[in-house]
Image (cartoon, rainbow, N blue to C red; front, side, top):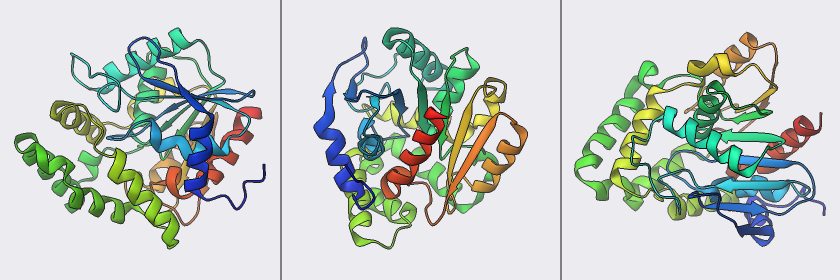
Length: 282
């Protein structure tokens, strides 16, 4: 099937048609059927497996596994803290149960989870999509201050954390495409899935982990085959820091997608899928 003119929304639908739920232990998991490479997707902060489905739809030949992280979607939260060490341990256990994958991909917060697992001994060919290569707490600025205040207040007033106006404002800030169809799709996805966390504790602890962590904290584990995919206009994970990390890792490859920011999975899923296909088959 020719996908060059297929919209992100249509790619999402193609993945849904190929997918079925098959849990791994206590983790809710969906498998997008395919006869090619086995690829594991690890989604980002506050979302669930649906966020990466447009990319899965574009990977026509691959068998994609897409779990909900603990505390999100259909997967129960940890009894322990939702920090990167515990998420990394969860991912290692998930791979052990599901058996080996040809490639593991982590988007945004998922890049931190994957990097933590690699640092704990996971062996996998890896793609970090919009990787968090700098700590938000160190960058600071008005945006970080507002985000910190938002989660501090939200811990006491949970309704604020999932307020539709706040979610839409975030979506509008991050969506870079001028295409009305793509913008509408991104906003719809955020409205449906950006507040899929299981409790206030999950999202507050997750924000702490996301804002204070960086994949550079786990650089010792990033010694295998690695591809980083960055958005040229990413304000969450600035491309300059990703380039800097790439230059420090001689084993790594880097692809920068122009005219897109942090939402490569919604705005340019086909470009991401093509980069993943080249890397997994290379």
